[in-house]
Length: 184
Figure 1 (tube, rainbow, N blue to C red):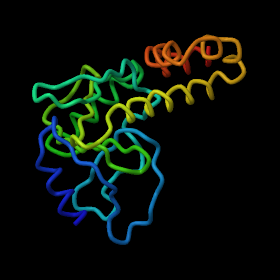
Figure 2: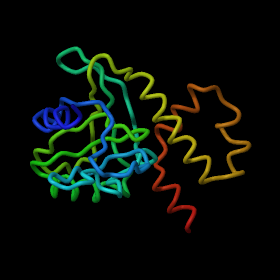
Figure 3: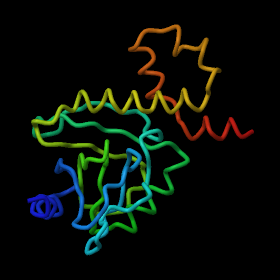
């Protein structure tokens, strides 16, 4: 059944998706960091071990409605990941990439061209709770930022503002820039 679902997902265009867990026969269950991964056709472990881009590098996430009236999440990657995303999508032309969240394939689009803009769309079947996914992505990014800044976050907007303001700031922050400023 999983193989059939995966095959169906492989035939879908970039705007369509599949949701489900994936584990090849004989493959030991491996925990993966939440993010975008290459799918390697014809191998036992078809999901690469290393992500292309992880959730902490998502910027400017938004819930939007597509031309069919379905809700999806759009976003960009941090500047430091733009080249990696562009190169990966060029390399994956005609292949599938997958967004893995909590070791589950959330969406698995086929790549049709190099994507230099660093943009992405997360679209799922209608029954999938896109709003909860959005809030979970923001929370994960916030947790990554707070882990990076450590005690510096104690008296910041993260501690003194409401959830909406915290989420807005988290969504706008570029994790990559924070990392590079911390290394200066």
